[in-house]
Length: 332
Image 1 (cartoon, rainbow, N blue to C red):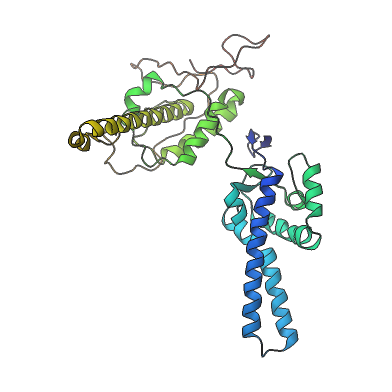
Image 2: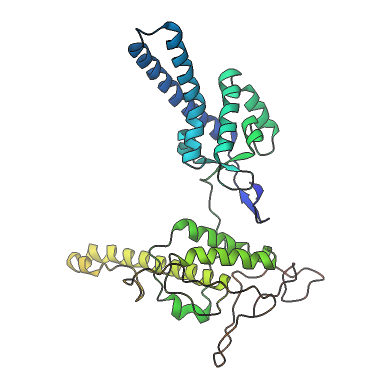
């Protein structure tokens, strides 16, 4: 594991790809390139047999450079850092700040790979990967990239608990269009909520909640903080998954004992009354950041108790009770 500092000055752990997996991915890519070059040489020899020898040689050299350099550059640019070999091994090239690989970076890596692998036999890449703490070869050092593994074990921490004031609203949510990537981003944010500064908590929470609200309806009640909104959506999503799995297990058991009843017993997972309504784009309205103040409620509505996404870390010496190490008092 290695720490990556994002553009928002947030430290995120990533799983650095190991040298054996990178070597296997490289062998797959080189095999694809060699097969492509062999087929291209046969085609050029068949089509250009009546051309001038110098012209045929120039065409062959140009196509060789295009395959050796253009193949990794094209694939990594279009697939956000994954060639065929990396796709097979579950690897991805990302920037040092955790962002997707850009064309300029892919071009630097492709040109350096031409020198490292095809000219010098991979020796510079091997030495650089062994010396670098993050396993970077020369192309990664020049381009400012890192190769990570996307198939590591997921660690989601303890399950989220539904905020009691939002339980009735969460039961009506339409969650079928929520992408897994957005849900994973929200889950990681909630796991690190206590480690973030108050301003970063609010800024990241509003951004993630706004992105999630484009796929979830109806909108939340007024005055709901971003972390409570995200916690309620993920907790309700997890509850429905558990209900669906339990019903599927019960349906399979019932179908074995009573086949005719088992056919009619299978019902879809619970959906709220908004399941058939048209999707609402961006219903979440961000609230202005007001530190040390609870969310505003109506004049006659009771003040809900918003709990933090997870149990706060132990209070350190010299820290007032009920505060995080950064001095931020969670909304009460």
